[in-house]
Length: 349
Image 1 (tube, rainbow, N blue to C red):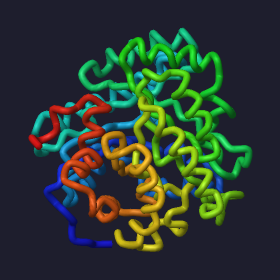
Image 2 (cartoon, rainbow, N blue to C red):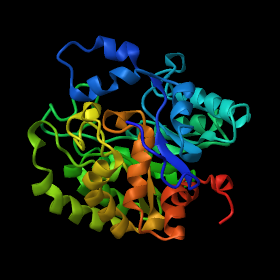
Image 3 (cartoon, one colour):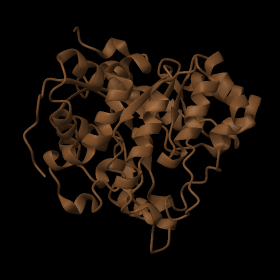
């Protein structure tokens, strides 16, 4: 799908993308595979070159934030510390971008890694090692909690226990984030939103980012129920927005879990169709959180399932068409720059 780039000069900080080599993992899954796994097959190897190809495809992407995805763990460091390998790898990619050889883009200017907070107090030395691996770029962690009673919703790659964010030992580890000035990215599914609301209320000073609009579901036993579940999702989003320590990422809706679009890349939908599909969720989030606490995200390459990179950002720009210049600056770059402390990337207002 080829489209003219809308508002090509608008600065963008893409606050959510991944880097990985999933080819061994994907090869290990027998047929028939979960739709999520099949969606990743064309992007099993997604390195800096692949990322840069998307970031320079027409929109004015000035910087990005890497978010953990379980890639490049180093088993030589031991079970608890193997996660440091991912941050080391990404920090090297960030240095590759920062050298200027590939233009002004600053990919992975901030890095969100992973630490197992179920270690409780033993998570503290892991967080310290993560900071040491990328002292100028490491900003925080994501510990995803996605779970559903229907095993067909998520499939085999996801193993979070039910109620993770309510667990006492998890919260013991979580408390160290605030002591170290680190952020937390929360990924869970729409039926689980009360868990992150409880977490945000229990730690009102901890900066938390809700990923992917809270991940509404249109898969497995939830297929075809988006409309009937919308009011419940909206109620929880508004309730979470009352926690001033929480921001929200506007995106992730093209994931196979959300089914927006349901047919994936084969549908060949343009930005007008995608904007119409995503608008109710994104506008609800912006209305609840405000532009200063909301940020558009690509979630690439996962959202490649339903939208090519230039088309995805065109869709976001269509949704934000009536916003003021100041609101657009916040939604497309400013909120991400502030939350992940990369304000130096922003051009003067």
